[in-house]
Image: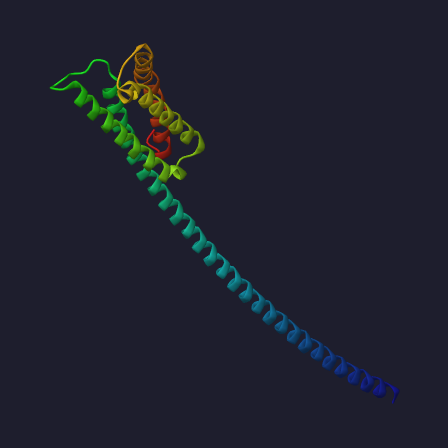
Length: 204
């Protein structure tokens, strides 16, 4: 009798354990599914956020590339045009300050035309440079300013006698200094500037 009761108790206990394990297993499965679902949701949310940030970064990068390209194109155009204006001005300043000139008919009239042309080219050079100086780094801008000042000083010194209407030792000395400056000092300064231009547009 005691054996039957023992077996009965064991059977009931075993059955109880089975149900308990089943309940625990089901509960664990539900918790796992819940956790998995929550993890999947957070993963999708993170991926969405990541995709959004990636698209924003791509858009910003594209904008920066666009701005960089536009700025470089503007700088390239500015350098080409300024170099042309500088070349024309330099050629005319050399012609104006040279002491050996070919006279076709009237020296004073032809000299006045040379002075007028040099002044016009100087103004064009300065006006263009002032409007586009933001495209030049500081070290290049300093070289342009130096050339600009040397051209201006040379122009004033050379044309001083023409403006006052007579020549003397003082005005001749100024004219010779202007000619020497144009012939000797400005050419290497221009070559140094052109080297900067080459570096800026990447053709060295």
